[in-house]
Amino acid sequence: MATILSLAPELVQAIACNVSRDDAKHLRLVCKQLGEFLESQVLENIFLNISKNALDKSIGMIRVLATSSSTGAPSHATRCLVIRSLSPGFDPNYWVPINKKSVTPTEDGPEVVVAVKDMKKYLFDALLSLKNLQLVRWYTERKDEEWAQNIVMSALKSIPSVQSLYVELTHARIPLSLELLPHLCEITLSEFNTPSDNLLNAQTYANLSALMAQSPPGQLTSIQVTHGYHDSARADAKPSLHELFCSYPADAQPLRLKHLGIMNSFVKFDDITVPHLRHLTSLDLSHVLQPRERVKPRRGRLSAGFRVQPTDPELYKRQCSVGSTVDELWTEFAKLGIWLKRVSLTDVVPAFFEYLACYSGLKKLSLKTGGFDTGRESDISAVDFFSNALTKHTGSLEELVIEASYEGLWCFGEHNISVITECRGLKHLGVSILSNNLRDSNPDSSRENQLAADTVDVLLATVSSTMPRLVSLKLYPADKEVNRGSWCGTGSLIHVSSVTNRITEHVRKYKVSGASCSRLPTVNVGGKTFEPERLSMASETGGPNEWQWH
Image 1: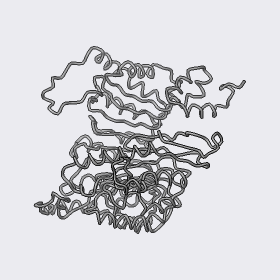
Image 2: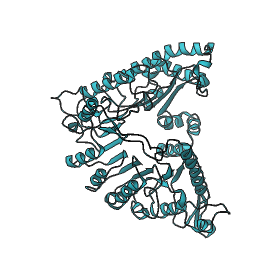
Image 3: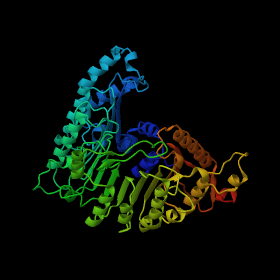
């Protein structure tokens, strides 16, 4: 009788890939041989999260890593490290009241004091023991202290195998010495809601500029930068693409970036920036700051009485020196002949459609269709996209995500189903759903509504029959057009929540039947993932295969 140990190591690893992480850990502990087979898989990722509700586990882990042999399993098997809380006194289940003055701070208990001593003793050596570490994802938390973050940064300087670094800077207590990490190939920095005048993060970006200046061509290939939110009409010109290249020597060979991501920044393609971008295959432009001579008036129903305000002339001049409009950016890209394989953006403009129509071969496209002043303007843009731009890439696209901010022609429907189904090579698809096209299951609803074809049903039937490679399908709600520009978000929240629940109900109830149907994609709605489950097999029942999402 064959046993699991008689199988090839590759088959054992394939089996482990189809069980939960906890079960794979238990399987590894069965015997030495299975432990060796599954070592690289189980220990490939390590999560470091030191907080009050997991002190024994987290402190015990760093103690073991720090004191274990340099030939131990984690030393050579771990490739990815995820760092979250570095504070033993942090309680992730505790929410800070709005009025912080009303809360009396409590002293840390003796277990927290001991944990802090252990961290200072073992944390550096624990991180240093991960000799083959390649990727670090660091999410700073609000209770992290400066000394703990300094230990992590000191350890990263001493691990030359680290090639990719992601840091969320929201609660950074120190400027990151990125210029001392010359071995990096990919770096992502994100501020999110951090104030734009944060001096520590400003120094981190200056250090990133210094790192770029000393990186040899071809080593640093991916840069993703997300600045805190800025008001374009009053923002200083500091958050910009030019800022990243301010330290780069004029006579040095340019970088050969493959991916560039810029969010909440001014962007301009000129003699300073273009030489480093000629090898780009992937670009993420989100919420690009654009120079404005005058502040645009408030859009929507409550905009009456707001006057157009002029921008300070000197500020506008500085912005123009480092920033362009989004239309100008895509026009310049087309002139340069840089044809991208992956694009993500939030500012959809006519020049982008013209750029897409100039070539074919796009593999990934992610759009968030905000920024339009009216629904009519948005619909005209959608027609242009589906009729002209998208048709050039239906044969190459592997991922297509279109998240509409408001209901209209950017949403999935009869007007675009034919061009979307032409993308037969899709592995990932995301579309928004029109609430009016959801058939109501309420028996009191109108006869017309009950007889109408349901958008979700049509979409699920379509992907099941025409997209055999699809792995995941994501369905988004869109806000009502009447809420465009509204100051109060209550109506939008109620509508989006209602539509999300209705979409979820349709996904759960829908059944797919077909003799040739052997695999279906997962479906994600509102952050919940539904897995396909086979209800019956044609070989068993004599009828078609039946599937349903749970």
